[in-house]
Length: 239
Image (cartoon, rainbow, N blue to C red):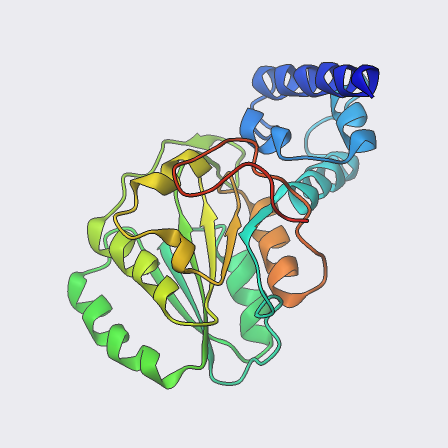
């Protein structure tokens, strides 16, 4: 047992080093959330696929599919009823479409709030939310890979978007997704344990957004494990 743990630790260390060397690959936290030993071995392999190839895209999507972590999950995941459901995205960006489009196809009403959205827009939408039975809400934060594979600087949270996202956890049945460093979850004034379902997406990438959409729709189950201890969330989950 001890040898197995040490061997897995060695592979994980190699994978993290690989991720740090290659900025196209997910960072250390997301790689550390993986449990699939075979996938970890492939990431650490010296025969990694070149960027912009189908093999590379497939590997990146597999990493996303198997690393996203449900730190809270109940019977409201996956989303089953699409009528009278809404999707809200705070700090929405080019990656948001990978969730928004999938949910819109199912009849979910979409509300996107990019950086700089005027406060009055939030006040107007807030009253409309009472008309929906279920709400899927995501917050885009942290470093992210843009469509051209460059890395965008960490988003400075806009306080009203930040607070409105957290407040939606109080409503029973809502699904929250957080694309950012999980250690930042403690920065929320409101405890995010209010969410019945909370998924950590680690980095704000198209692959993670696609994986989140699959989880929300029940096409895959969350497999990742939280690799760090935070004030409100223990290591693990996604069992």
